[in-house]
Length: 376
Image 1 (cartoon, helix red, strand yellow):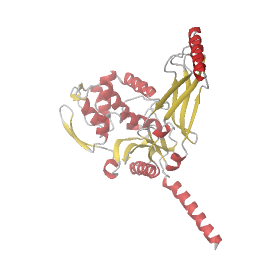
Image 2 (tube, helix red, strand yellow):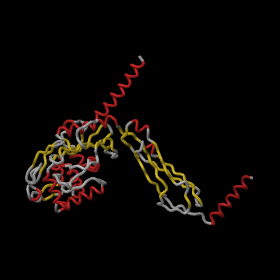
Image 3 (cartoon, one colour):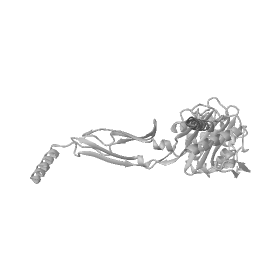
Image 4 (cartoon, one colour):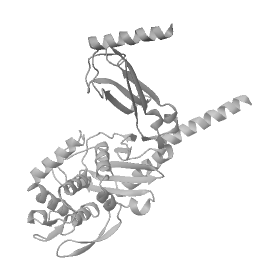
């Protein structure tokens, strides 16, 4: 009887283990899920593998547009931006179109002509605009990314990774207008000499009630790609899949990894781990100790098990020898789970630590003498 009970429990453990494995099994070759608020990676499948990114490129193009132009700025459409192939809204040469309309044209139906119009308006030509894209990628720390054009049509020098694209989307969503547009299902937009009804190519907005954006992509070289954002309770996620075989696969795989992440993680307040108290003795200084306190409010996406394993480590100077000046490094404070650092902050002296002068020693000796007299 005991053997049967033990075997029963073993089978339950094995079943749960394999259920967890299969729950996150996807066919797309590269994928990632991050917490939108903090950037923490919550799911990873070859997420730093360099791959073609197709029209996910237009997230970067949209960032440069919103950072370089006002939404109501009128942009004259260069003839080079028209009739380039792939998905287009049908821009006409010499029409004047607002920057906002071009944003909608890029982010809803994925208009290559809109992306080209932005590139010619801001960069003057494709090469200059690509340089601006790469400079922005460097600024954002996208190490495995290189841009060659504003739209994402296949080019050997045009690539990124699931992780970099998730970080790029995180940055893009910090702009309320971009966040608003990528969450829009359909919109009537004016493109100068004509109006057009646009429908968002991101089907998750219509089939997944937690979806809030962001962008689809497809070329023969990249296959089917998707950046998707979603929200449950307070937890905001960004999922990316690259190289899916079919359109339905990219949506199914993205929903799978987002749902699996929602089932495991929630936002925990870790502020109680971020109360720092520094108390360092001072040698030969005017003051006997350097005392400083610091606190910060922060939430992080964690499993319950991870939250229970959080630990704090700190490495501060064991003493300060005067003189020492404001801005001098005095130590580091870290909050971690397992080998992963969730939070790290370096601390520096906030004030000059002055050395005792002979007069200070004299005054100190007088005070000690009076203290001894009072004690008699």
